[in-house]
Length: 217
Image (cartoon, rainbow, N blue to C red; front, top):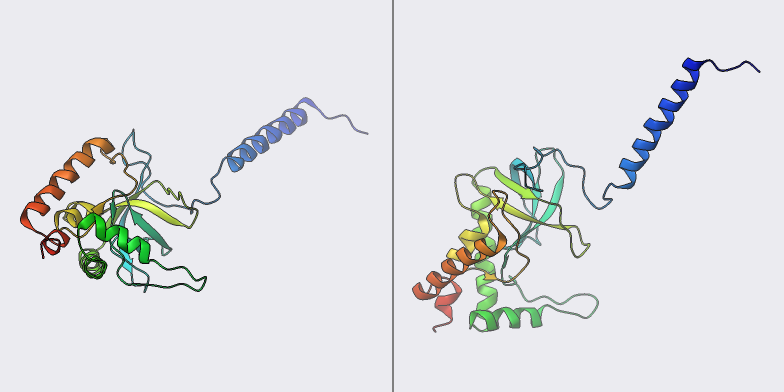
């Protein structure tokens, strides 16, 4: 057997090191996270990925706070808004015998409305989200957070030329502040942003906007 020279030995060692590095990177990859082609972190301290030029994808299950989005690379993902919960837009019963009636009743209690009125607000929230996101391509900030394992990824959505989508929905009385918060991409803390949202909600209550006007009937 021919002896391997120094050059051959170093080459073999280098190949082993490269293979080990690739294996380690692959083992740490999140298998539930979609491949992304975003612009990377929004800032040096942010863990969000930013995607510009996104579009709303029509789907029968789209709602005021959960909807399909087509990313610039063509793939479609279902996103869920941080901070807010829109009422269900219809009474539904499922094949396994369950339904969403208890959830609607809980939403109605928070708004001080009937269940039927809550569903009406859910329809308005769905339409408002459709209107705001259908005008022009919008920007998505996401960490690919999927707490329920159902491939609904939490996100912050910024319509073209406007404020955050969830802010607009709170201002118009179409959602309750009732879901997972998050720090904003610009470094604003979740608690600070929640305080701002509650001010918007209080103004909507005083003015009887959206669901808060229904609660006075």
